[in-house]
Length: 116
Image 1 (cartoon, rainbow, N blue to C red):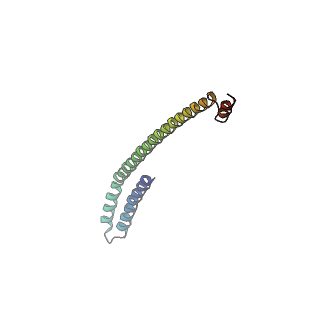
Image 2 (image 1 turned 180 degrees about the vertical axis):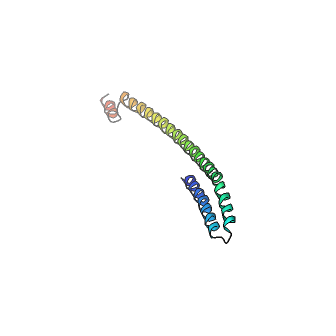
Image 3 (image 1 turned 45 degrees about the vertical axis):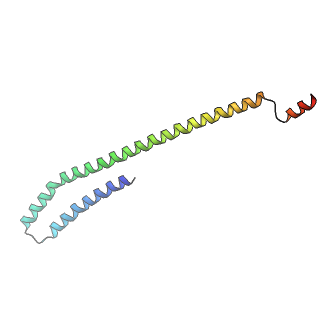
């Protein structure tokens, strides 16, 4: 989640920088011709800025995807271990119950010895 927030923050920072630069150019005490040249250069730089932003967002998305995949794999491993432990415990309990059924109860054993 923090990777997504940092990507949004970087995008907002770049957009804010571009807007600030544009506002600075418009408020600057230059001649109209100089200001128009600077505006044209800034407008020409927008596609490159958009490409940089797109690349940054793609990198953040790849990191987030890799992190999610890693977490998913770890969760599956823990689930497999828990299922295996449950199966083992169930088998042990089943064996204990079978032994209890085949051996006489401890309560009836002293009575059988007294009758003998």
